[in-house]
Amino acid sequence: MIIFELTCGHGHRFEGWFASGEEFARQQERSLVTCPVCDDANIERLPSARVSVAKGAARDNAPPAEPTEERNTTTDAAVGLPTEALVKLREMVRNTENVGRRFPEEARKMHYQEVPPRAIRGQASRDEAKALTDEGIEFTSLPSFLGGDTH
Image (cartoon, rainbow, N blue to C red):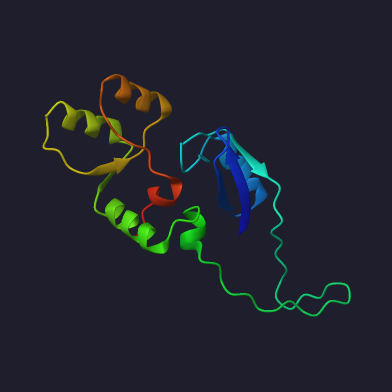
């Protein structure tokens, strides 16, 4: 796992965790990497001072690396949110129905009172999201650290 320091076109800074640099590039090309604050897909890597040394690896005349405590991925992924707040946010997301790619269709049905309102989440393309907004249908994008199924 590799951790990149990232920034969006609006200057929001956050971390991204990827299997490799190539995986980051692949996801970035497909606009899958977005800012957790504003959902901007104009993402750039920032220089990072974080260096990972394998356990027990020796450096020039340096003592072996001390075992390090596992990083708390809960707060790291949430751009520094307190653990309590993140737990509550994730609980709120878990209490929604994941309708996947049917999100625009389901949101419209509720907006036009074709079905009873309920808490849903899912995916919409940028064009679908714009169309929903143009129709006056209110929704919000979830930051990536909340968007995935957390069960």
